[in-house]
Each structure stands twice: as structure tokens, then as C-alpha cells.
Image 1 (cartoon, rainbow, N blue to C red):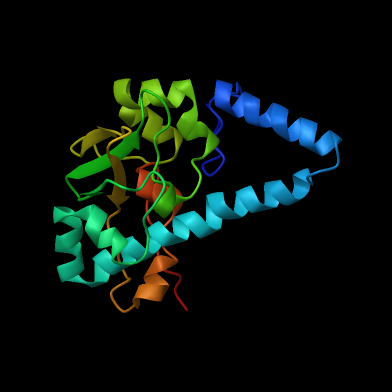
Image 2 (image 1 turned 135 degrees about the horizontal axis):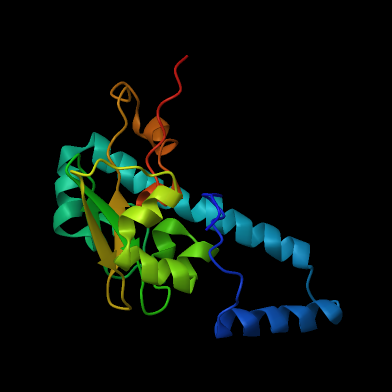
Length: 206
């Protein structure tokens, strides 16, 4: 597998739904009804900016507010909704917290269930058959391909999303971020860190 972490491509085959969407887009483009560049821009924004920014705000609040963190552990659906993030594929959520002893990884082995309301659109690699199978069989190897190298003593727990329940990983808060406010902490949280295929970013020193 290649080592492009934000656009990690495990395989280029389209699933049936994606193929149908592509065919419909082609027809509408040929008829002059849509601009594919405009659609690509909207999709890219929702996939990498708008959606993941919601989840990042949830994580930042959990890092900085112990009461919210406990609520997120007990009832992630309600805690996340209190920040205004709910809706499609985010109706039932569970937050799993990374620690020095345990690293959490999210996958959907049956299809590509994904919490759109907090993470935006799922990346291509998340939906690919190789990721969906290998994340369960060889999670440490998959993580290494995302440059997530963990000590052998760190337990890796894989969570399988379903149509009924989806997961949000709360990454370990980076060292040196104690003096940052919630807005600044939000900038350290990446989409991949909330799936478990990445770490939160270290704070930029002045």
C-alpha cells in the first residue's frame, strides 16, 4: 500500500454505489447540468475541512473540559449533539479514548459506515476492501503504513462500525499543548487521528 496518509489509496476499484454515482455525474456533465470541478471542490471541502473540523471541536473540548470528557465517555451521542453535531450516520456514537497503553482503530468490515456528522465524507481508503479486511487481521501492520508506529507493549483495539453504532477516536493530547485554548487545540486534531490511523499534531512552537 502507498504511504500517502490523507489520500491513502488501497485500491482504485469503485464499489457499486460509487460507480452509479460516477455514471450519473458523467451523464449530467455531458448534458451541461453540472460542473464537475465545482462538485469536486464541494466534496473536497466537506471531506477534509468542514466535517473533520466538527470532530476536532469535540476532541478539543474533551481535552480541555473534564466534565465534557466524562459525558463523552458515557453518552457520546448526547455529548456530541450538545455541540450541534448530529444527523446522517451520526445518530448513535461511541467515543473511544487512546491512552499510552491502548490505541484504538476504527473500521467497517461489512461496508463503509462512517460518522459523517463529525468526520465529513469517508476517505477512499476507508471504504476499500484491503483496509476493511487487513485492519482486523493485521492492525499493527496497517497502522505502520500510515506511519503510526506503536510500542509492542501498546494494545491495539479495533472497533467495527455498523449501521447502528459508529465510533470517534479521541487521540492522546499532544505534549506541550497545556497552554492552548480549545480553538487552538482544534487545529491539532486531524481526521486520521479520529479514525485511529494518525496521531494528533504537535503544537507549533513560536
